[in-house]
Length: 284
Image (cartoon, rainbow, N blue to C red; front, side):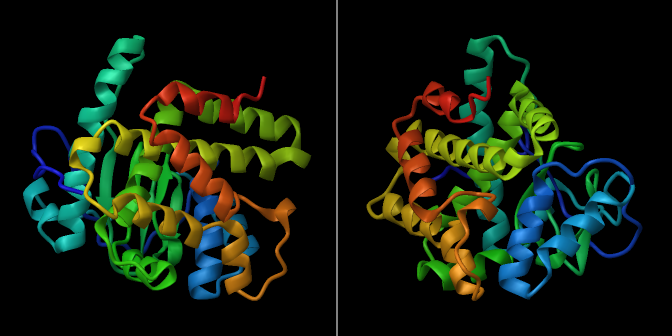
């Protein structure tokens, strides 16, 4: 995908050294589920223990943040530059959508963390976390080492697969700004038996929003990009992740949706109409 170079005037990015500190009080939101599942698949962590640890701690602001300029943070490697370019494009794509809808817009902060982990407004996350979004500090957290693992899983090292990942996390930021994230959490607390089902809907909507971003920038898409995205969506479907980790596929335990569902949501968004994504999380 031919993204323009990022402009430091339209992105907020930092680089956290990771490591220490306690985990603080308050809910973690959807990011904890990402951490639990990806940690289990890639690093052998117990997803139940990981999630319980994060939920049981104390909320705190990110710490151990390196004093780097945006230019320096984005120049730490090819993946970092890609993520900054994508963030600039995502901001430029979504800000007008919010303006047209009359909804206040705030661009998120991209945290390219490294080391043993990172402290966030939602608690501490280990290096095993993979990419996630923290609604408490509106931060998109990406350990860029995850992309090498994604390439191994999907058999694809194309850039669009990586752009799909950050666009998905940006989708969670959209949900936070529009209030759908709060609606989902409220519905989950009222009906814990549907908690996983509702989480799946939220993740699929984020996939749809990722597709919308790409659909609104079709002039930048190169041959093979869509196929790269579809392979990535398939590789991180709950059914495939469970099979890879030697577990029995149990749809009731899904938190992000099956490979087919994730591909379908991404494909829906590629039409470029964000209103098509609304019905996915219509919880009444």
